[in-house]
Length: 240
Image (cartoon, rainbow, N blue to C red; front, side):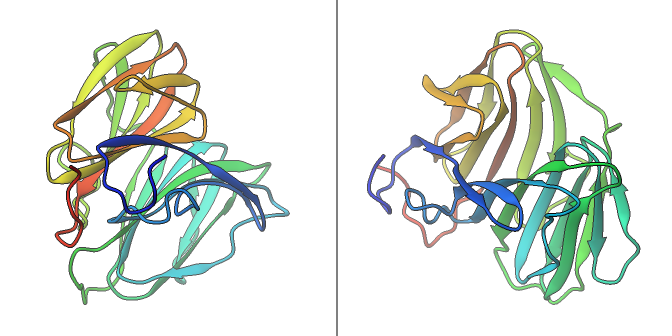
């Protein structure tokens, strides 16, 4: 792993597990990857009825929440709670301060994945919440089941420039995805084993890529991942 702040095109980060109010596995920020703007947080969590994430605030951030397993309840401010099934996602754009909470639904625990990004410019608009459900359209690309979440192909339109999709590999396959010289990418392994441009990743690990034209991702049968890209801030030097 390169020293923090050293720009490199691709590297793998192992998620750090923390047992707190909920069990989390964090890729950004960690001791080995303290920053990765515009990505402020790349993390997955597991919660039960007795231990769940408390209500908390976001300011000048965009938050994508994706339910990996189980049933969740989601609440923004004082709006009615929403029930989220496995595969559901929410995108919160919080230009102004906004409070939300994710908690287990009735009957068990949940596992969810979060991306938190800095907004590229100030927004004075009220918090905006967008939704997509597990029934949203999917496609098959290179034998990989692709579920667009946000961006040009997804049902949720971000203010941060976030492009994201969920992948499932029903068989051992390789797929190639465009990134771009002005963007950063995250490939987070939700389950199984795979590789990103030849670098091995498994459950709870992420490949972080900066300024590459594209990525070649191989997944063994059953591999699940979230792929996300966002514009690199102008204040961050490109990799050499």
